[in-house]
Length: 308
Image (cartoon, rainbow, N blue to C red; front, side):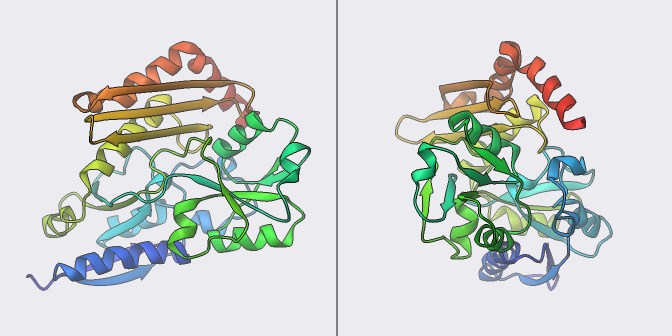
């Protein structure tokens, strides 16, 4: 094994560090030397404005991109759902790790009686907001930002009924709240529950090391979901959900994709099962279907409303 130490760039939140250490252990087990370098991202620093207002895709990944391009770190570990569908020039997708839980959960206080009447739910995600309002039009949704630990604390400190989280993030750092329910009706963010490792395209040693960590099933499913997102031109500024699952008994892919209006009143969806051979264009064709069924008009409305 060569002597090169692979420097792993990560955000400094507990979840991001957990993800970086997970990759580090896998590389160490294969005999590679590693070092973790923590970097603060703009998305973690500016907590008083909703993400879509900042108008940047990849707000959590930009700082690490710069660190990689400048040669301060060799690879970066991300929650894949935070990564823009177009990577910066020179940076490549090196490994997608086996996917964890894809569902969203509701962490709530007291009882669930509020679901029958009026309630206030917190989330910083337009996708979760729109799907919640679609199902519970009488409810109010408030913005919630910060890393997982901070969001949990804000839920405790405010008089909201509950907040929506990705199950995978909470499970990874053993932060699952006592009172929670799975929102199995909510379509997750594209690539939710998956971890992505990116590297520099010209760094063969590191890319070779990371190729050992790639999970092909997760890679294919997240590719489909992110292609759906990219074709709809989502970034993190539109209420878009996507989930592809592989059925190994039938060798098929089940794909569900949704696009909502910001208030949740309009819902455009696609739900199909195709043979595995058709995976490469599945996200694209599904997005085209949504665009042709009113999605083009809806995306324009969403963009105009977010500019206000």
